Length: 342
Image 1 (cartoon, rainbow, N blue to C red):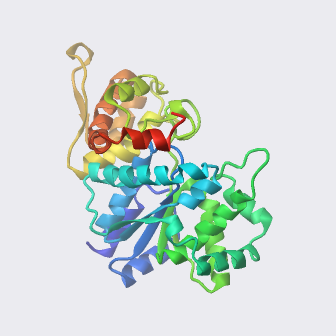
Image 2: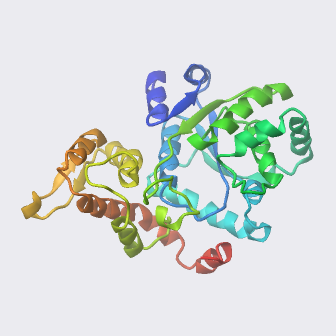
Image 3: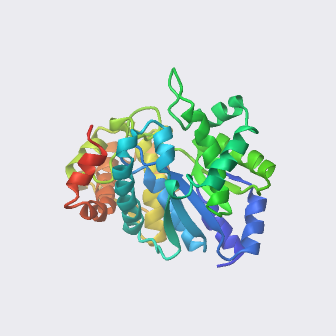
């Protein structure tokens, strides 16, 4: 795979790359650059995670070494109760690889790193204290505001969170970081702050945020109706999609269509398959699409009904979730211990 193809693959469906020039230089210099994505074991992972899982697949195909940071200390800083951290880490440590395997990912250059395995070491903590003398309270608050649940009476932990995320780039020994667009301010903080400690800045990848299944807002673990859990059963998936916000003829702010664009059509396209919507003959019979642009054009022209789309999406989601559910058979006690409130 040449440089142009690797660039095309890793930048498709991205909102922003900081910067593409640095990315190209990195690909010229390294056959297997290292990247990381951090996810804090807070709420139960949902199908929105497939958006970044697809990108992880792209990075793996493009020759990257991929590290997933299971940021347990970050989870505590973002209000996850300390006694639940171990069980939630165990849960994520099963569900994340299972999600990637359900997509058919080659995990030979993939690893999971636990945050507390290096974030408690003296050299890391010492660098964090040094960074705290460089970054202002204003800048730390601004960086954390779209990621950490600050609330009306924010904790000091919320200001530590972005400092640690910046340092993670250095201590994970990576060339770039990937995350959602809501993390942009943290990424910029990292690029501005690390050189002041004598470390290099990294390439930053920002993925668009996918709308939730309810009207308004992103797909979130904290809003139950907005998301489908990765271990929801088939009936729950079907019901949540039946109830999803999917106005006829409207693509903007439509979480169902966003999921199709960023996940299902990518999966189908990479496998050389078409997306099929099953319909009774009296409503035109089955219809298939080879790319999202053609589907959206048909949808906005009201040639495809939302209920038929929802049924098709539910079918495809259940195919993706089946192997993940299988990994949790017999682990019901782990789920209950990790999420006792559910």
